[in-house]
Image (cartoon, rainbow, N blue to C red; front, side, top):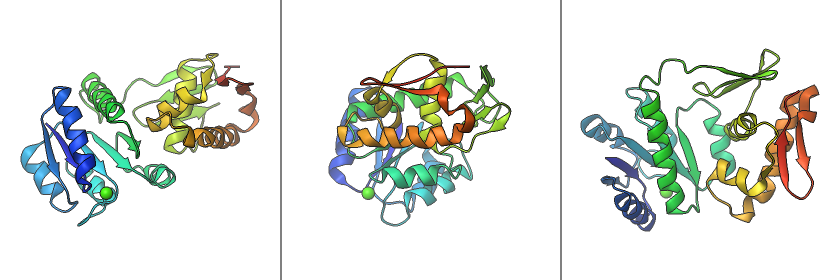
Length: 224
Ligand code: CA
């Protein structure tokens, strides 16, 4: 069962419809308080959690849930920049989607998170850390090291770097990277990718040259 915590009735209904069509059963709560108790009692497979909620804000609900269980949580928010900053604080959410979103994309995210969880039956234990060139990628901890030093990354920067690292040399269009980061190919976010790349380059320091812009196409990472 997927629990949808969302106070905007229309959005909640659309999400429920799409998830039901994808074969999931859904439950709906429209307030943040009471989510903890509900989850304790009903043990849903996954929680879709809106950020702005009456009763108790989504971030607090997320912390509360994490204090007693590891149910997968996907945050839903209209505040792209805000969530990026806040999720950097090890909030424990598994993923997030930004409003406006396509319900189809949300369903895809739900499936992906559940698949990931099934692949790692003990989410608390370490997944193998992969080494690629001068980098190591620790997906479970959302951590990347470069020449042995841990990079300080926001969630968006981590996702971006992860995508590029897993496909070295591959040229990704801005649209592909947007979908990876925000679950949308809305062109309104187009410039956000450039900003994330710019910030990511700063984090890479002297190795920034590995992250290249391919004129008129997008970005690629070439391992040294
Ligand atoms: Ca809301």
